[in-house]
Image (tube, rainbow, N blue to C red; front, side, top):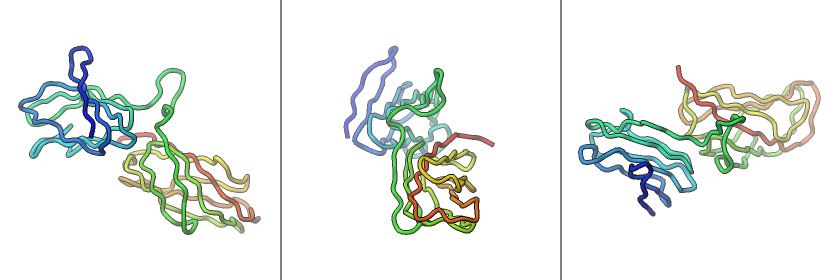
Length: 199
């Protein structure tokens, strides 16, 4: 684990890399701080025993993201949670936020990719006669209130795709033949992006 400390506007900034989790100091002896994830995967911040972060057990930070947290009693309160989303003239994620995964096994085999967006390459399959196939995307960024947008990166004009169910940590995606004709054996490649929601 690598942890370095800098200051931003007089506030300590902990820059963390090389680990997937980091335990914060006790709230009672701390001051407001920035925490930045300079690793290549999600960084999970954990509070001390009997303490919380935004009244929860942990907080996840994407690569290249940072968060400003303030100790209030035994709870770390998020003041500013910077994300890797674009904000000027574009909507989406910045370069380096996504990832890719290739399905193995069958067209129904689950895949796992813990990124807010990315590419899914499916196994070769012949979609024919209104054939509809479904697989599970396991992804720790997905919450039950979220919208997972999915589109074809490579496919066939006879096909359609959609997300049919979301749960905490996963969603189900279907790819189907919209015509009563065979596509022949093809490799479908999908793009997806998670849109955070609340209800």
